[in-house]
Length: 266
Image (tube, rainbow, N blue to C red; front, side):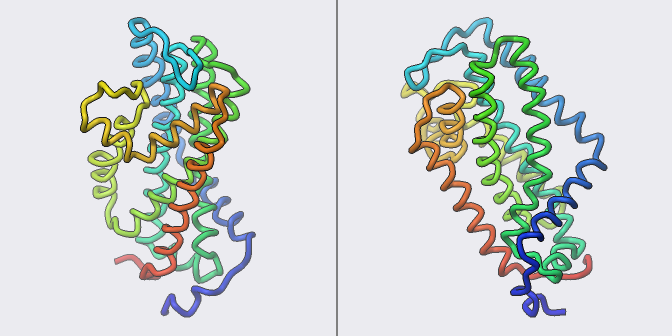
């Protein structure tokens, strides 16, 4: 069957619900994943950040002075985004390799429906990790203001759309799970630390670090998260964050519209 014959068929917005339901069902079946997701905030914040906080004092950001642990806690939120991108890559790779993507398109699911619906799995995982981080922050006084933290999570969800779309985009070129793991380890793990997640950006940083920081989209997403988490609400930064996500989703949609599809595994 030639996928070109059904690329223009559409079941409408309800297709998003169909994709999201499938991702929710997949999430419920993956009990072991919850343990892995729970360990990330426990290790990065509970062990690393709280240990560093004993030797690091306060941080000034957007004319607001906060404790280092409060500053770093917002940085850890971005770790969750790249982690969930791995899940999006995994799910999209399964769809592509076993013909599920072609079947979904055959039944009227358009690329943008697919991109939005596929965010269900990562968003649920992200909210689970944010809940654990919230509990840890409340116990250790690592939350600047709970209300602002909850608003910042909305910004994180918007930013997650960038990484989910990027993960799905990369999955169109990844044929094995081993390649996916290599991409995550060699490229996107360093990206998480090249942004000012656990450190404060300064002109005293090495040149290579400053360059990587400035070209890293995570840097600008962090600015958007922190401007909300610490009550600054810089509209320009928030718009940049939204446009980054919208731009990546547009690129991913264009690629999905042209990707060769198959109805059976190799």
